[in-house]
Amino acid sequence: MLYRAERSDGVRYHESRYPATHQPDPGEGAASWLNKIGDMLTQQLYPGAAGPNPLMAFPENYHLRVRVRGGEGSKRQDYYLYGYPDDEDKKKSKETAPKYFRSVLEFYDHFLWLQSDPDLDRSKCPCKLCKALTEAPKEPRGATTSAPPRPDRDANPPPAPPGPPGPPGPSGPSPAPTSTARTSTKRAGPTAPPTRQTSAPTQSVAQLQPDESFLFREGEIVWFRKMQEAFRLGIVLQNQPPNPANGTSAKSLVKPLSHFRRPIEDVERDEGDMRPFLTFSVPFILPSLQGIVDQPMETVMWDDIEAQLPHNASMKGEVLTLEASKIAATHVDHSYSVFNPIMNPHLPGNPLSFGGVFLGCEKVGIFEAVRVVIEQDEHTEWNNPEQTFAMVVKAIILKQTEQGEHLFIRGDIWLLQEFAGSSQKLNQDQLPPAMRRETAFRDRVKQSQGVYFAWVPIKVNAEKPERSIRGRFYESEKLGPMLNPQWGEYIQNGHILPIQRFLNNRFDSRGSYVGRKNSRLDAVAGAVPPGTVLNLGPHVVEWA
Image 1 (spheres, helix red, strand yellow):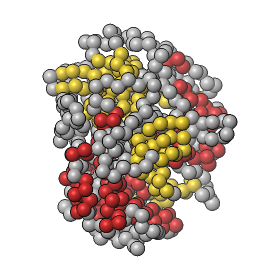
Image 2 (cartoon, rainbow, N blue to C red):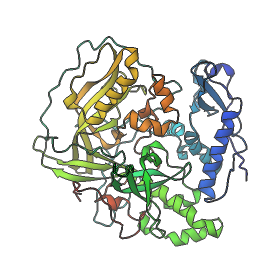
Image 3 (tube, rainbow, N blue to C red):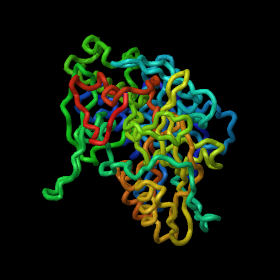
Image 4 (cartoon, rainbow, N blue to C red):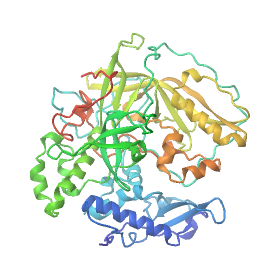
C-alpha cells in the first residue's frame, strides 16, 4: 500500500534564500521521512495493517535539505523540510531564510491537515508554524466549577482576573527550534557574582521536597511504546522501584487511554519505553470526529460512533480507541487539579494555597522547576529560544474572583548561563535538585573547554498565570538520550543539545479550556473504565 499527497500548499523559494549549510538531500533522508510519514498514517487510519506503507513523495514544492555536522564524512546529519508558505514573504529580504519543519512529527500535523481539511483553513491546522501565524494571544478566563460529575466545557479559555497582580499571559506559542545548536558566549564571570537574594517569607519547603525517584510520576499522562517505534497515550498508575537483588530496573504500570466502552489491559514499561507527554504533539483527530472533541467523554455514544466509522469492521474498534485517546489527552492538557492544601498566611489576601498541582498532563510540586513564558519587561532576551529559563515554584495559588477562580504559580525565575573560569557554585540551597544536577552535568561535559554553568536569578517572587507555565523542567542528562539517538555522540564531542527547546508546551494541543477538576480521576473520566483506581502516592491529598 502506498500513500499519495493529493494537495499541497508548498512554495519553492529562490536558492539564495536557503542557508548555505542546508544542502539539498541526496535522497537517503527523504526515503526515511516518507517511510515514517506512511507508518504514522497507517497507525492512525489502518491500525494493525502490515507495512511498510510509505508516502510516495512529499507534497509538491516541499523538499528536504540536510546539514552535516562535524566535517567531512560525519554521520551526524540534521534534516529540514522546506516548502512551507510564508505569507509575509514579500515583506522579507531575500536574505531571510524560509521557515521549515525539522522533524517528521512537526510536519505530520501539517500534512494531515493539508490532506483532510476541505477548506484549507490554516486556523484549523495544529502544526507549530500555522499556530504561530493564526493564534492570537489568549488569557485564561475563569472557569466556574460545577458539582460532579463534570463541569461543562467553555468553548473559549476563561478571561484574566481584573487588576494586577501578575504579568499577562504568554504572547503566543514558543518559537520553533532553529537549525543551529545553542551557542552561548563564554563570559569572564558575572560582573557581580550571583548572590543570595532575600524574598518575602514563604511556607517551609523542607518537608515538601519532590520525589525524584522516577522520571514519570503517578497520575501523569505519558507516551508509552506499544510496538517498535509506535507510541500510544496512557496514564501512569503505579511506579515500581528497581530491585538490585535480581537486577530489574524501575518500571511503571500504565493504563492506556481509550474510552470507557473499550477498556484496554494495563501495560508495564521501562522508562526507556516511555516519553513525557510534551515530547510529541497530539496527532490531528479525524475530521469525522470533530463534533465530539469538546464533549465530556462519559456522555459520548461511543458504540454508535464506532458503527458509523468508514473502516473495516475488524478495525473500527482500534481506530476509535486511538482517536479517543487523543481526545482524552487534549481534555487533560486543558485541565488541572490541586492537592495538599497549605495554610500560608504570608500570601496577600490569604488565597488558597497548595503543595502540588496536576497541571495538564504533568505533576508539579512546591520547590520544583518549571519552564515559563518570559515577558519583555523581565529580561532583555525574553524571546530568545536559545536561552534556558526556569522558575522554582514557591507557591501554587487559587484565587477567587467574580469571574471565577484562577490558578497562579509564584516563584523565582532563573537563567542558565555559561561562564569562563573555575566553577562558582552559589545560591545552591535556593535551587531544586534537578537544576543543580543540570549544571553539574553540563560542567562535566564542558570541563575540557574551561567553562562552567550557573543559574543566575533574574526575578524574585514572580507570579504567573497558568497559561504562562510551559511545563515541567526536564534534565538534559535524563531526557536527552530519549529525544535523540545520537545523544551520546554529541556529548562525547562536548556538545549539549538544548532539549528544553524541543519540548512542546501545555495548551499546544488543540482543544477548549476545561479548567479545574475535582480530582485526577475526574480529569480522565470517560477515558478509563469505571472502577479504575489511581495510585497517586501516600503524600497526595486531593482537594475538591
